[in-house]
Image 1 (cartoon, rainbow, N blue to C red):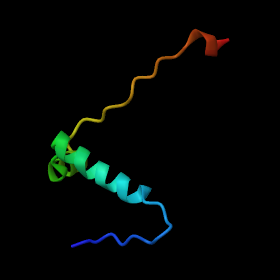
Image 2: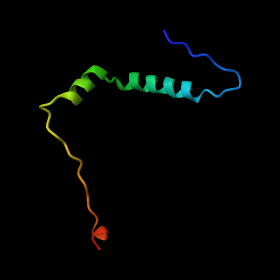
Image 3: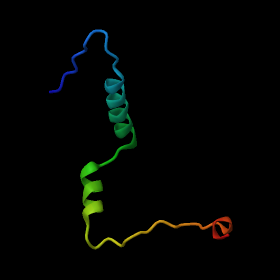
Image 4: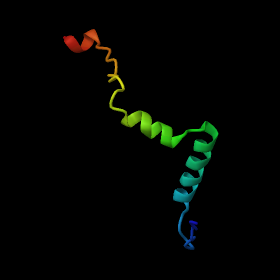
Length: 59
């Protein structure tokens, strides 16, 4: 079990951020093991981002 020890006079933004990220993850319902397996699959097709080129850059 982890415990957060508050040092008097110090700010606690790191604890707030950690707490909010855990809450958001629970609300979204991510399955981290499935996400990892999907990302590490070798047979998955490569998806490259679509790049929109502006005519202004071609001047």
